[in-house]
Structures are given as C-alpha cells and as structure tokens.
Image (cartoon, rainbow, N blue to C red; front, side, top):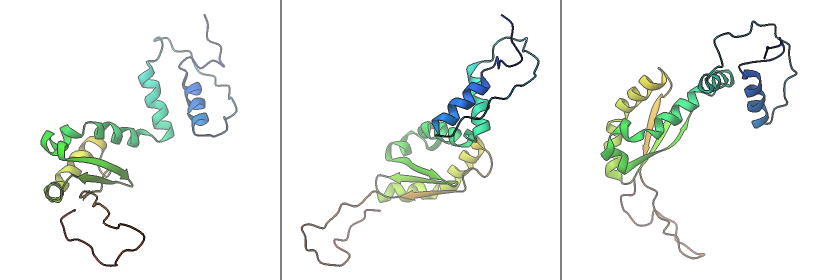
Length: 156
C-alpha cells in the first residue's frame, strides 16, 4: 500500500474536518500537500488529538477540565468533600462551599490553590479563585411578600 501525495497518512486533516464540522464551520477546501510519507509507522491517536487540540486552541480548556476532575488531589480529600468547583472562565475559578465556615477556610487557602493550578496549567492560567458559600433558600412565600432582608442566618 503506497501513500499518494494527496493522502494524509496521519489523519490530521480528517480530524480537523471533524472538529470544524462539530462547531458548525464549513469544511475548508482540500489542499494537496507534497510531503514525504512517514516511514516510522502510524501516529498514535493521542498524538493526533493533541495536535488537533493545539490547532483549535482547546489545550488550556482540556487541561483545566482534567485538573478539576482531580479536585480531591488539589485541595485534599477533606476539603473536596465540602466544596466543589463550579465554574471557570477568563482565568477565574469559582468554587462553591457547603457552608460559610468551609467557604472562609477555602478563602484562606485560595492563593495556594492558584499557585498549584498555575504550576499544572502554566503561569497565568488561573488568576483568581472565588469561593462562594451555599445558596440560601428562598423565604418568599405566596404572591405577596414584605420587602426587607428577611430572616438573618449565615448562608454564605
């Protein structure tokens, strides 16, 4: 089986077409590349996916999701039981704690968490960790309610 000059033996062009189709972009016209056929065998799929992720700009997001899946190893098993990452955008990681006590505890360790995340993702990937407390229940009952602060309790 010989590779013609039009054939991409690594499958990178096909992977890029699939990625463009997945995000709704029109496929690019096929270019004929005059490259030397590879002699070292097929390329592992992991390497191809890594190249596609780099080309599409997905590397940082994939790294963040991989790290957040290892949340207990980052913050410790005890802290992981009482909090979970909720959102990551523009370098800001939002973490929700189950009580105001745990939120306060995590706020004190936020700078260390930023350092750990930046060490794993690259400097500047995470700029801030915002820790929020639990969501307070709604105390509004019925169509009419009295304006004001409502019951006083520590919900966050």
